[in-house]
Length: 174
Length: 150
Image (tube, rainbow over all chains, first blue to last red; front, side, top):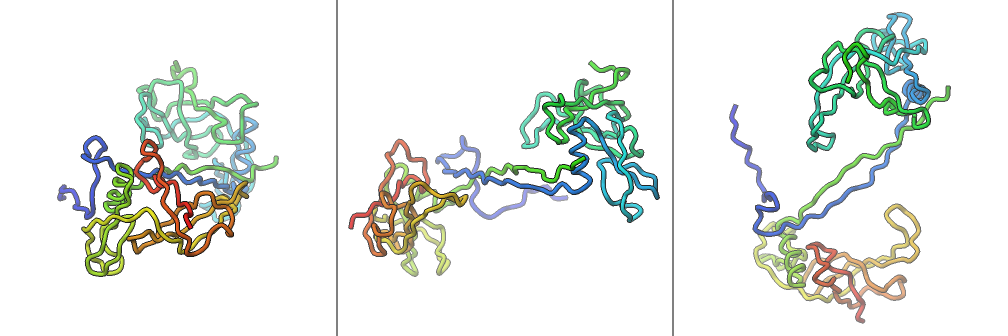
């Protein structure tokens, strides 16, 4: 593969300190306020989070317990059947040590996003959340973790009502 | 249990725009010298303000910088009663498209001290009011607005 940079037509500007002339820039930040419909399943899921509970949906045909819940089984092509409470503990399925924030600023302490398979849901059923109270080097696939919730009075029916997931005691939490 | 029906969110987007090669020349002249600098098309005699890199009518490259006078004539105007979010303004303000003397393009800006259509007309003469040098940043807002002179 050729590694020569592609030549782009136009007038390039460089970093401000390298420019002989001050380049005039106009900043603009549009206000983009959205309201999304949560849907049946996620609407209930969020309401239950406020109560400090995780809820899933089950399909009687394939016997799967799905979280986040959904009203339609994508394997059986039929509506799901029952609401099922599941545990607020689980197992790390995969994780990442993330040294940049969402807007690409460098982080000294990495964020540790992970997919957590939830106890009581079917194998492989997991949610994406954050791992906390553990040294980045100690995190591993298969690690047992438990949800750390916000105090009930501070919850807003959001996935952030769980602050993070901390290793269970025998996993050597700090 | 009553489900949550709506989820509210903001999408943070911040953009920075350059004025382009032509606009850069105009805003530099405005900021540093308080002058209006346009570009003249050698083949069709259009004079663009702010300056452009090429002629929109005949695609000729524009290299000839020409000064434009800080006064001109109102070609169109409107009185604004609501803000961009459609909220009623306490005090309306006027916007005008002005053909400055020496330019053939129109420039859009506020008309100072006008809040009623009876105070302005198509054909009104206006002058350009600049901000003081210390407040100029190199943008069209270095012009405070137009003021009616007749």
